[in-house]
Length: 104
Image 1 (cartoon, rainbow, N blue to C red):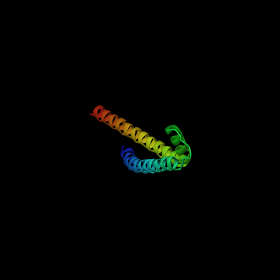
Image 2: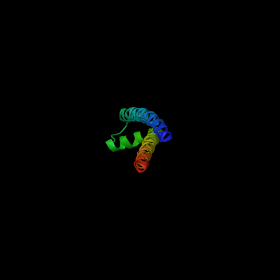
Image 3: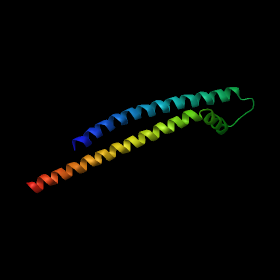
Image 4: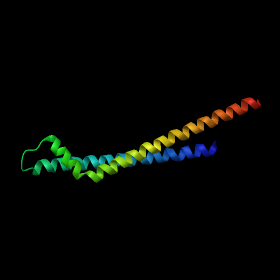
């Protein structure tokens, strides 16, 4: 049980770190995306639609968007690992209590 609790503690730290990375990644992507949209509108020679501006900005920010998706995926995976570890701890506690009752 103690090893699982230690692992759970480690995962909580990983979730915190992954959450920060995901937030930083999302913030950086959104800022660059907004800058790209503004630049596209400012330099457009002909009238373009909002969808066209968004499409072009997405293409310009492709790498940042991918990095954002990867950090979000990592955060979800670490959260799931944390939930799994918590489930294991709960199961071990239940098992331990059953053994204590049986020995009783």
